[in-house]
Length: 227
Ligand SMILES: C[S@@+](CC[C@H](N)C(=O)[O-])C[C@H]1O[C@@H](n2cnc3c(N)ncnc32)[C@H](O)[C@@H]1O
Image (cartoon, rainbow, N blue to C red; front, top):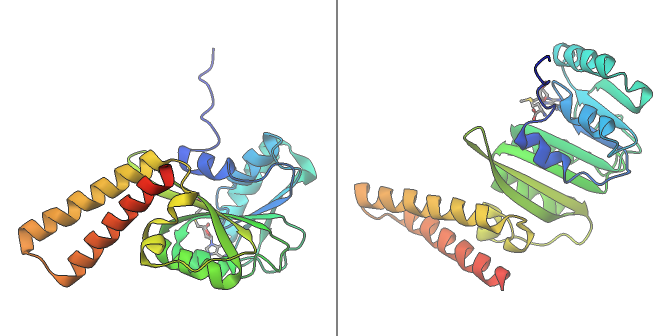
């Protein structure tokens, strides 16, 4: 028997896929290899998906994947920058980029028709959270996960009822939104230990004290939200 084909998605993109609302058209911006939209159409989760990338080389690979899977018009790969030129997509996903770039891309998502965002910033997640409220988005879920030894964050947001986030929520996401509180608790414990080790090595300083206070308050909010 030939070896089984590797799964289309790693744990990181699988965590994104599970937050995409079923039955609604979606667009994946910065799609690169194009696996996320391909998986969503192949699995029947969405009726139509568009993978967008601003470079031709990754799109060639994505189109080859689409041709292999034979998903027809339900799966389309397009060259474009951000959400420019998109219309009628209910969900926009943006994954594997820095938070500042993700924030610039989602600034165009509402005009494309989106009511749901699913975002996986590689870094700069606090900046991304800070950008969502002023654009009219409210964070509804957050998940901390580990994929091949690396920690990732996946957050989803819906349009309307934005809320103001303080320094604790910006750093770790609102406690109420976390779908895996144990994973956030483990991350907070690791951050606490890392910061305490820095204090032990270099002595206390105001910046470390502020960060330790943020971690302590995030832990307290997580405990309260579990009640
Ligand atoms: C690091 S890859 C991430 C690929 C995939 N989303 C993932 O998470 O595995 C980033 C991709 O985004 C594309 N990209 C960067 N800025 C973009 C923009 N403004 N609009 C569309 N695509 C962009 C790049 O060409 C690249 O293929």
